[in-house]
Image (tube, rainbow, N blue to C red; front, side, top):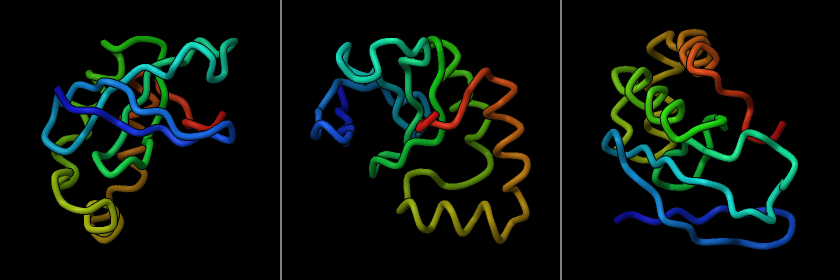
Length: 107
């Protein structure tokens, strides 16, 4: 099972993750990180950059599947970002994440 390292102002935490799409991880934030937020599940690149947070693992997994065709997520985060940007998919990425119920991971 893959792991993800989540860095917060209180420190870094390593958690278990799933990889529904090669290069994209879904994991739950530890209970003590933003405990009042209902958006406990994160969709992140394997290098750690969070794309969005969700209310359920199912929603985060659905978003991973939806954004999968936009880039080769198994490559570096900068390569994926360049594919999305240069391919004209920035707006589509945001739309797909929002449609799946996601919000900005730092909200």
